[in-house]
Amino acid sequence: MVVIFGAIIVFASIIVGYLGSSHWEADLWKLWAPYEYLVICGGAFGGMVIMAPWNVLMRLFKGAFATLKGTPYTRQSYDELFQAMYELFMLARKNGMIALEEHVNDPESSAILSKYPNFLANKEGISFLCEGLRPVIDGKVKGEQLHSLLEVQLDTMKREGQQPIDVINKTGDALPGFGIVAAVLGIVLTMGIIDQKITLIGKAVGHALVGTFTGILVAYGFVNPLGNNMALMQSASLDYLRCMAAAMVSFTTGSAPALAMEISRRRVAEAFRCSADEMEELLKAARPK
Image 1 (cartoon, rainbow, N blue to C red):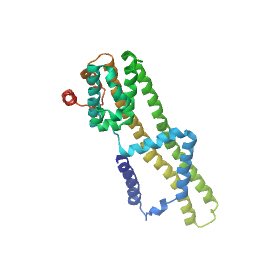
Image 2 (cartoon, helix red, strand yellow):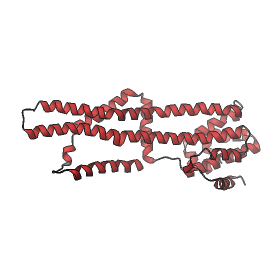
Image 3 (cartoon, rainbow, N blue to C red):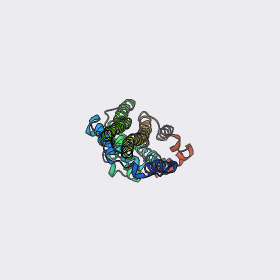
Image 4 (cartoon, helix red, strand yellow):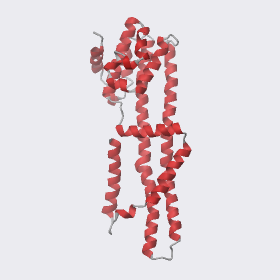
């Protein structure tokens, strides 16, 4: 919703500024130039299709839609993460890592994870947790090796997540150029009526300039800010997973569950980080009775 609110602010500022600063009669219809919009937006979209394979475009559209819902990583999501991991680690400490097998193999049916619906709904987070713990449970990876394994996975996720962001940023950078293309085409058409009335020529030149205006507006008012929002969303996702990785590595290398949670807590950004006392209360509430 914040993205939509921002788009409304951009539109309102441009339109009100256009209508309010004019010393003559302003007419919004003068900005209506659908074929210029087709040249600019269609050309930019076509360039984007040429630029990236289909799977990257799908991730781009998915990421752009996700910005409308806002980041899922809130204080509550971190609190549930701490409690879920603490319960799992306490179970493993009591009964051995093998006790976690049923929970990581079928997280949807886990008696522990089902207590934390927000965490369970985060498919990426659940997958990362289960894939991280499963090789340790199976005995294929030792705790000391888990850090390298998770870092490789995080690096891959970062690289894949950056691809659609690069595509949308390059598309935004290209939009002013497509605006110039639309303006040049408009001037070409204007030259064909150069012997007509000055009012007709002025209208044609105005339509051509709308192309330049549109390309710049769409680039700097919408597409580039959307790319930056997607980059911040990806950063928030990686921070969440790195917080999880820190806890898993700490626990599997011998730390007590409470210490693993404290290490994880210190990995959280200040805006979402609970205090040490609040963490103690969270763990106390999650502690098996």
